[in-house]
Amino acid sequence: MKPLAALPVAMVFATSTMAADCRVDTFEGNPYTICEVDMTRDRLSLFLNNDAGETYGYFSTIDNALAAQGQRLGFAMNAGMYHEDRTPVGLYIENGVEVQRLITSEGPGNFGLLPNGVLCLRTGRADVIETSRYAAEQPACTSATQSGPMLVIGGALHPRFLPDSTSRFIRNGVGTSADGTRATFVISNTTVNFDSFGRLFRDHLGIDNALYFDGKVSRIRAPDLGRDDAGWTRLGPIIGVVEPAQ
Image (cartoon, rainbow, N blue to C red; front, side):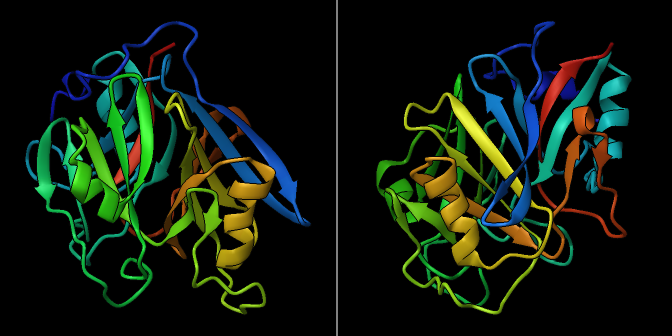
């Protein structure tokens, strides 16, 4: 089993007070589970495969691996689109190792609905960065995951979103504060369209840059709310907060 304690070497190390703050909130009649991660305090990490090359796939698998090292998985969420073999569709960096390259071209499906973006983790901060900007700036991310489409870009909704769209799914995504110190993860508790989901981040949460992770397979682990979505199939990339075991 991969030595998980060594993975996020550039992250802030655990303290007895660390834990993502999760709550249930409502926007325009739709309930959402919202978890806020303080990047100056919490240890946020990406997970894909163990050292045997086996995909973790489930929150419980990661939690069991961490337990063997006196740690546990707190908040967690699926974190980006993946192929049938669970390899990431776009850029994926874990603990400084690039597993998949950045994809800048337009393509089929939600991932290729440009502009898409990257969640970039660095010491003490997290940033959602639009893909073309990421390619131009080449930030030194300790870990990163690419997904799409962007939900909010510099305070504007994705230009392809339609307010009256009938395409409704359970959806999840992430937005980051301007200073990078807070990452806000959201999953809808009922089906919503892209426009409504984007406006939740922009109008209700006041977030100027937000990224869609997925729909249909969206899952979250929020222990303080008694929620731990298992699902029937394995996930690809997973993001979560590593905490000391209690």
